[in-house]
Amino acid sequence: MSSRIFFLLLLGTPIFAQASDWQLIDNTKLGKLQLDKASLTQEDKYISAILVYKFNETQKAVPPNEAHDKREDKLIFDCTAKSFGLVKRVYFMGEKAVQTSLVQGDHIHFNPAPADSLAEKMIKIVCDAASQTKN
Image (cartoon, rainbow, N blue to C red; front, side, top):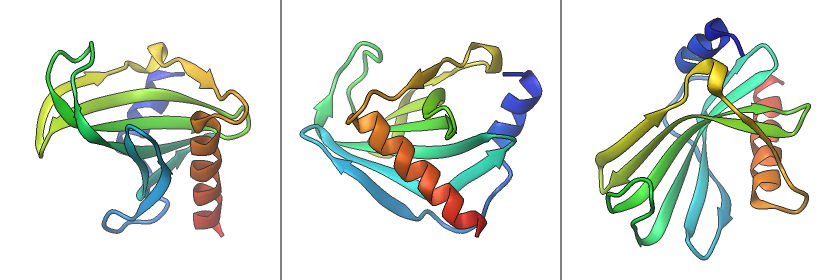
């Protein structure tokens, strides 16, 4: 992915602009994974979206080595290839960010979604929501 596309994905071209509009993707044993439909942006064939995982219990994974109860991911989706890549990840404890990681454009790795997985469900919901906002 070119640096230009990466930069545009970070800025985003809003499909529609408004306050957060949360859609539940799944309620797992770890917590709730939600899509902010208001965050959907499109650049060429990619859809960018913010997803938040609100954990039921405080997590302490490696990385980060900090306790956190929420994770916010900025992901890009290739709806045709049914894959996604991580652009930015922020871990929170309450409202305080405890760690942030950013992937540079040429280093974004697209992950295909295994059949019947949470990733497949996530891609379907994001791509469906993006196509609905175009109509």
